Image (cartoon, rainbow over all chains, first blue to last red; front, top):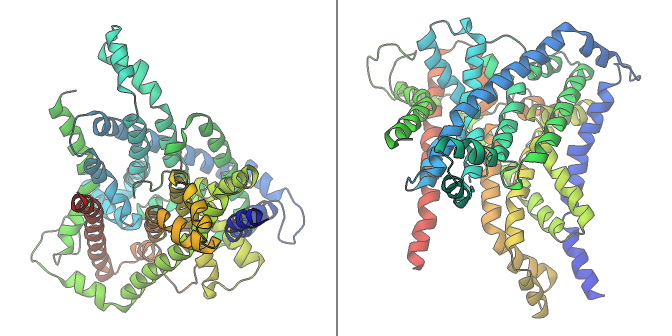
Length: 268
Length: 265
C-alpha cells in the first residue's frame, strides 16, 4: 500500500505541467483550427480556406517563402558544412572553445544583430532596398547559421573513425571516403540543420522588414491579419504553417537521430 | 585539406559573423551617427544616453524582469513535469513528451498567434494584465527546460531514492534532498536557456504584450522604423554591452567548471 502511495505521488508531480500543456499548447491549436473554419459570425465556413488557395497573392507568398527558405537553407548548409567538418574532424586543440566562437553571437538579441548587419550592408550596397531578396537571404543566414552548424558538428563529431580508416584501407581515395562514408553518415545532422533553418526563415518577417524587403512571407501574412484584427484569416495561415511543420517533422523524424533534435540551445 | 586553407575558411566565416557586431561596437564609442561616416571623436555619449533615456532604461529592465520571472516559473513547472513524467507509465510519458515537443518544433509566430487567439480573443483576458505575455513566454521556454532535465534523470541512480525512503525519509524529503540535488546541473542550464530564449523572443511578445509595453526586440524593430538618431546610436551601445556580457558569461562558464575540477584534484 505504501509503495503504491509513494510511486503515485511521484507521478503526480507532472500534473501541473500536463495541465499547463493541455490548456496553453493543445487548446490554442484546437482554437486555431476552429477559427480557421468559421467566419466573423461564428458560422462554419470554408471561405478562409478557399480565399487562401484561390488567391494568387497568398499562393505567391507561399512560393516566395519556400524559395527564400530553400535558398537560405542551402546557403547555410554550404557555409556550415565545411565549418562543422573542420571543427569536428581536424586535430585542433580546444575544439569546444572554437565551436563556442561560432555559436556565441546567437545569444545577442537577433534584432540588434540584424541592425548591425543592416548598417554594414548599407555601407556596402548604398541603397539596400535595391537587393531585397539577396539581403533577406544574407540576413536569415546571419541569423540562423549557428542552428545549422550545431547539429552538423554533433553528427560529424560522433562519426566512427574506424569506418573511415576501413574505407581507405579498402582502397577508397579521400573524395570517395567523403562522398560514400562521411556524407551519408552526416545526413541526420544535415536534415536537422535544415529543419532548424527552413521553418524560421519561412516565418521570421522581422528580418525582411528590417532590411527593407517589402515582399510578404508566410509570417508577414499572419502579422498583417493580426494588425487588421482578422483572427479567422490569420488562423488559416497558422493552420497552413502547422500542416507544413507537421509534414516536415514527420519526414525528418525518419532520418534525424534523437541527440540533435530540438537543438535551439543545447550548447548551454 | 591543407591546414592553412582550413584556417582561411574558418576566418572567413568568423569575419562574416563578427564584422557587423564589431564595427557597430567601434562606432558606438564615437559621435558618428552613421556607420561608414568619418569618425571625428571618441565619445561615451551613446552609453550615457542608454541609461539616461527613461524609455530605453524601462524597456531593458522590462526585458530582463520578464525573462527572469518567466524562466523561473518555467523551471519549476518543467522540473516537476519531467520528474513526474520520468516515473510515469509509458503511455502518459509518451503523451507528455509529445505535447512538450509541440512548442519546440512549432514556429514561434504560430505559438504566439494561437495563444493570442485563445487568451485575448476568445477568453477576453486583458492584455494589460500581463497574463497572456507571461503565459506565452512560459510556453516558449518550459519545453526546453524539460528537455534539458530529462537526460539528467536518465543518468540518475534510481536506487538512491529508494535508499532514502528505506532510511526513513518521507517522499518529499527524498525528492528535495536526493532527487533534485542530482538534477541541479540540468535545472541550471535549463533556466539559463529559458532566459536566453525569452530575451531573444519577438513574435510571442508582439502578439501577447500590452500595447505600451516593450521588450528589446519589439523596441528595436519599432525604432528602426523611426528616424531618431539618438535612439539609433544608443541601441548600438546596447548591442555592444550585450555582446560583452555574453562573452563574459561564456568565458566564466567555461573557466569555472575547470577551475573547480582543478581544485578537487
